[in-house]
Length: 146
Image 1 (cartoon, rainbow, N blue to C red):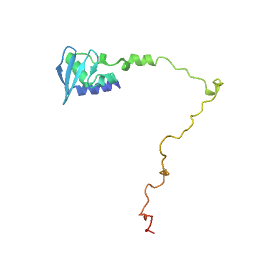
Image 2: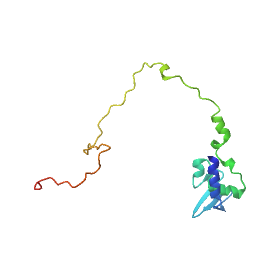
Image 3: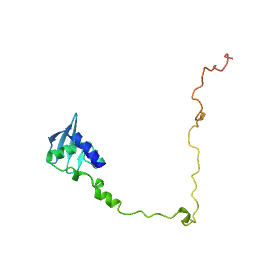
Image 4: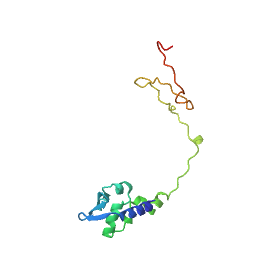
């Protein structure tokens, strides 16, 4: 998944223009928008690199300009060795709930329902299959209309 996103960002990077902005900072022109990439703190002003941990198109543009490799800048969570380390141990199954020791504490009861402050609704709640609107006109009721 990370390699797919990296590939998409690399394609978008071809449309960006690099402008040098200091020793480690680069100003990247992406259409009408400008973004600043800083390699020291692994950041871009579009914030995609910080949020995902995968270099955005602007960062990749600056990396290609400096002839840097892109893979070392991908966060370690997306690397194969981290994945293998996370899943190297097995989760042992637990016994059935019937075999758990019985608790001597009182059972947890649901909270008491209290009336909320404010005026209660007067509109009747309709059944799901009940029509929303009545057909035809209804005579107004009141004095003189009988």
